[in-house]
Image (cartoon, rainbow, N blue to C red; front, side):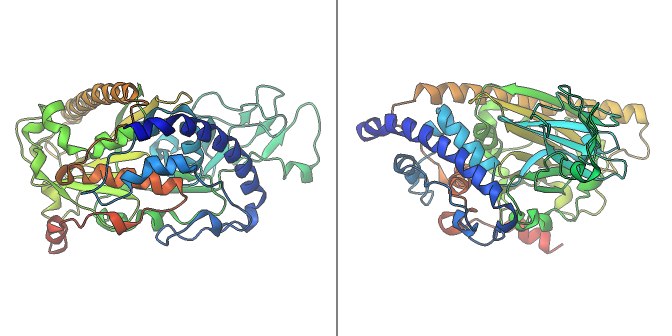
Length: 462
């Protein structure tokens, strides 16, 4: 422990130095917009693949803190507490992980109609999502092209145009400049003064993903084999039921780690453990920027999620119809898929390090309402399911906030936690995604454990 104590203060200094360098580097990256080319996520890549773009090397002390985690799980240690508590590091993380990776921003249903506008806050970065009159989806930085004022302060519906409150510059929902009252701007100038567009925008499984990197790789290349695993789930056709927002006193990574940590179920979720036992969780993992496992078979126990209460996705294979799938798509969205419904946890780091904005959303399969069930009764069943899911999440929030307090208490103590390989392989995988992302790389499978594929074999056999 003494060796860690010796270099923790320089780490904080290095974080601050790197934060300044990151801002300079990001401006340089935008200058080489047209020339920037990334290899696909499935191909090992480094920041040097961007012509003219070199981010500063991570400080040696940070590398030293990360090194115990960058090992095979049997030898590795849990990520150091500084990665969850150091305020200077938090900004660097946003620049590297959310500035140079695909991240989840919203659900498609939130901006499904012309005139829908959603404001997405990612730390200190504000982004506007819009749906224009032609039903096209857009993403822009939330700053006016005149003096840089914030254009939108909140999400809305039925919007006709985006108007900056400072000088009333008006923009169409496709981002083009419409008017600059009372001045008249030549048409050719207007064409160059639209809102700055977020370079990468794609959708997958009913979720909107963004990438701030010029010329980003295709999202599906980063997802690996996940689209194949989900091809029989009609996730683009789900019906929105309800959502709940949280302001959590915990680092966003702890929320992701909690989701993939099924080892805590018995201690934290007594009601859930009745039908989702710890040892019923099996790997469902392939290559790609995600963590995946499954509970199979599901057990009906008289709860609101019992299979008899809802219809299922129509195209599932038999084993899928009796299983719950759990995927965390790096960096920031967790997806739980039951045969009849899906709930997601979308997390975004707030402006305050150590606090996270989370949105829980419940969506139902297109066939969830049974033919012999009235609409009122179906809504009651969905409400009961939503209450059950939010109760589980409320329990998780308490556990996460308690964990954040404990990690803060360890600040400066030089302690790394321990992995239990049987249960902690998902956490180990996620933490190594974080460390790889800091280096500008996709996860290398080199140090990842060889996992069983019994469930996948059942799926493939039909």
